[in-house]
Length: 333
Image (cartoon, rainbow, N blue to C red; front, side, top):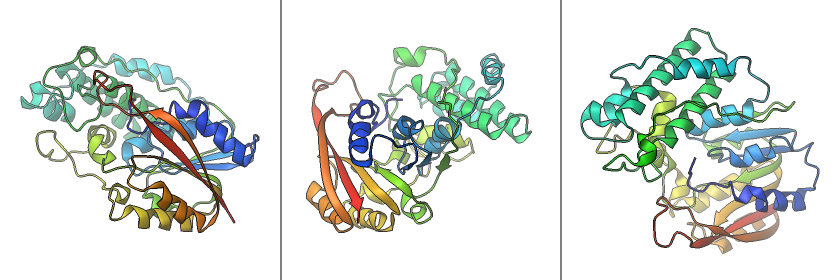
């Protein structure tokens, strides 16, 4: 998924290399927490390296994705058979996504083609029916649901996020959705996934390494990815406005008035030896403020690297501009 703030490229070297330089090369006895997990790239990077990953995000679509990629760690029997059955299911008419987010349904919103809207409704309804009838396990439920979210995102008719749809179907949105399994890493360890406010959850968990990647700016993830939450939850509501927005979580990390206080409260309550904060030079909190807060609780250090900025449109003229990604480090005293 093309995700705001994705750490996919940074996880190829910068993040794991920096964490190992501080915590040691052998992390096999460490408990690693990814508290603002998003699509779970960082947790997935450390899943096979540590004793346990604790993953959390307040957005439900993220919870679904991490229930699959992080919590699922053993083979699920016959999961490909279920993928095939879903791909071949007869399309239902007038499902929630088709009616509200396709031109054929409401004559206006065009987040998906009519076919793909019906396909999403068909697959999502069948997954829920199977789960409620106890035909599938929880592990398989989240595997199938994560697979649907990723494949639906690939055919979404947006520039990238769901804050707006395009007037005409782009080439990728014209392709028919085909469900492909979201394959996860196998290992012998159990992992934990939560769907909570980070500042609340931090009081109930503990471990060795805490990785923080909170929102940097005023963008609210609940608004930018509202349609993924709608597919994931699949509960009826009255969509609002031109984009069919739903009620969404508003993070205190997205406001200059609240972010510093919220951040310090988190650091103060964190029961982890090592804390790493990803933040960039365009974030709401200046680096000197972050240093001031973290230094109160132990030894502070900083690593940084140049990083290509997120771009919603690959055709934009300045698509090669970059930003500086900081990794703020705290070793608690």
